[in-house]
Image (cartoon, rainbow, N blue to C red; front, side, top):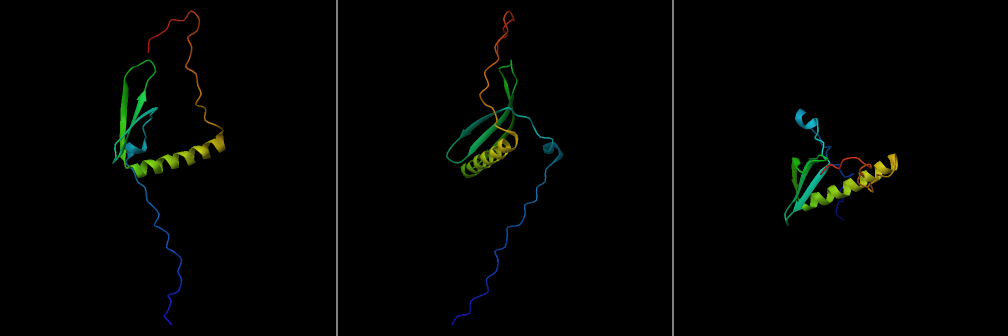
Length: 108
């Protein structure tokens, strides 16, 4: 009869330790993202679009693998579900503002 080693609980993976520079800790506000991809990677260009201006300034580019992009998609979906459970649905059905009668129309 062979000796069977005693069962041990699986060791949990070590906790991740996060750190960031002060410049990164301040964050960047983005209200626009352009996503491009090829077979090897996804590229996210985060930008700020200003109403009334045609130019969009790219503030940060994040490149990742398709696997990590899919994990990001799933994590974002989970976090949006938690947010909406706590704060209510996020509206995405806004209509563009209509100019008031007699008000000058500004070009975009």
